[in-house]
Image (tube, one colour):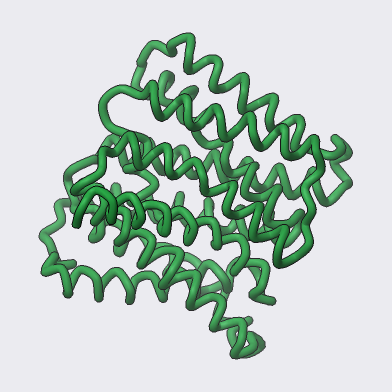
Amino acid sequence: MTARNALGALHIGALLFGLTGVFGKLAAASASVIVFGRAGFAVIALACFAAVSRRSPWHALTRRDVRSLLVSGLLLAGHWVSFFIAVKVAGVAIATLGFASFPAFTVLLEGLIFRERIRLNEIMLVVLVSVGLILVTPTFDLASQATEGLLWAIASGLTFSLLSLNNRANAGRVPAVQAAMWQNAVVALCLLPFAVPQISSVRPLDWVWIGLLGVLCTGVAHSLFVASLAVIKARTAAVVFALEPVYGITLAWLLFHETPTLRMLLGGALIIVAIVASSRMARGASPVKPALDAAH
């Protein structure tokens, strides 16, 4: 793969991740059914990718690996459920922008958990994201759907941040594709008791949207990022990742007529600028790697 093809693959991957909220809204099913189906289809897609690329999904796991993958799977389940609840309650745009708060949570929690000094530019990241979220919120009335949806989206960002930190603590122990496959398997098992009673009422068309979520937005998108990172620097990939809210909001505007207000656009711009700036100033491993394991 050439550098140009790898960059194209990154943008396609970001676009597919941006479709997550769109497919979630199109599927007329509960968040638990959507997450269960997405995880199940993702396991199949990632297992196929592992087989084609000759990366065995049956790599020997230690007890520590099993514990880490279990915790990651539980966090991923919480992240996805809260995100799709936000989509159902407040729409794709607010859900996507609320989730984009995860870098700010990561900065704060990383400093606390790993006892790392929080730098000035990281404090600015938190401030910019916070101001952006304030602008995104149309009203601070807890009874409004927009505020409720944003709170669910922020919870999605928080759980994704915890997932990222857990993956960082165990980085390199399990290949990325294998880790993602097992995490999705845990998600499917967690949601199985909640999804089974509702499965019979899910329309065939909704299974199409859920299948696309699992195959395209998880399996294919993840595989594209894994393949492109062999050529493109992780820091560059992180900047491309910041375009996910742009793709998501644009698609929601075109498909669902969720026209963003000027205030929402300003808030979204602040959040995206903060993510890009943070990616460019990051040291060492890029924040895109946890996203690869989780496949938002």
